[in-house]
Image: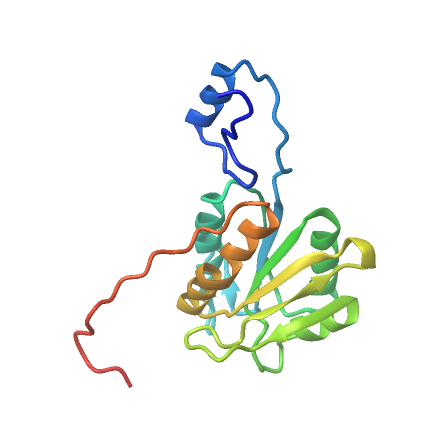
Length: 201
């Protein structure tokens, strides 16, 4: 009817919605700009798939998992690769990512190891809003703002390096945050109970 709300604010446009607004004779609608999200892995021990492994190295699986999870969220994503534990290179990558994106996500480098530089870089070029949560897996999750321009700082999420921890913290914290920043209405992840087949230490 005339004056009736057809699609509310924060509604995510689907193909049927495009047809719906077209059927009403509407040629243009106001939408949020697609969120720009950059992500990279940190650590000397990481090797990209297709490269030979040396002693003490592992394949970087988190980048591929993150790419898959982010690809489902209708955002502009940039995979910046895996960055070694070099403070200057990490700093440059972080600042470049923050300059050109709304959100920066890293995996690894937020724990308490000698080569975990991310927290210090965040404090130097932004702010640490929280670091470590009372949850397992996923305890060393970090969140803050990063960027040299204080008025245009990017959101920063530092995910743990452990692959399971990275996925759990992404689904519990990062995905809802990205949806909120995008202007999307909150859609909770469904929960269901399962029985353990063996005891957990």
